[in-house]
Amino acid sequence: MKVMIVDDNIIVRAGLRAVLSRVESVTDVFEAEDAFAALEATATESPDIVLLDISMPGRSGLDILPELVDRMSVIMLTSLKDPQLIRRALDAGARGYLVHGQLGVNEVAGAIETCQHGGLVLGREAADVILRSSDDDRPSPLRRHVTDREAEILDLATGG
Image 1: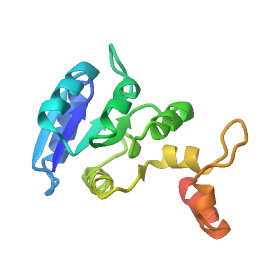
Image 2 (image 1 turned 90 degrees about the vertical axis):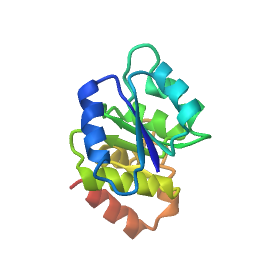
Image 3 (image 1 turned 90 degrees about the horizontal axis):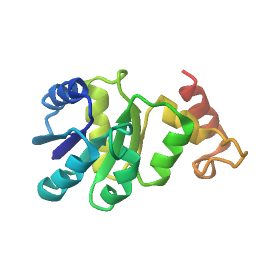
Image 4 (image 1 turned 135 degrees about the vertical axis):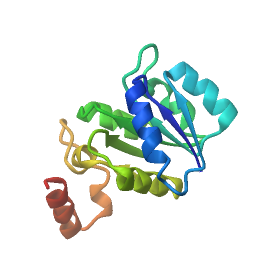
């Protein structure tokens, strides 16, 4: 599978490239340093998965997310843990939200495989936002799909 890394930090891109080189199912890795380069590269390279940072100069990852999600799976991979950003990304069609710095080869590989097969991948921070009620006390959309016991287990898991 083809994976594109979109992050303005060259060290993050280099680290992710090294991790992806150890994932057997990844055949090609492409990089883009900003949203503009990402849009150009996705048009020519057609990646299966995009690992997309939120905070970049020019246009943010959230700005271009709607332009990508119809053609490929997008996993937000960022250092930002803000609940509003997490909700915006998932509402806009991201198939995952992970906070880097806490991920190893197995976590990245699992996230990519899950998204490629249509699943949703949530890091602890994103799962906590989704499982808990929002600031305006609306119930989480995920709550209606699980039993009370399943919700209890998920709450315990997100709490560590």
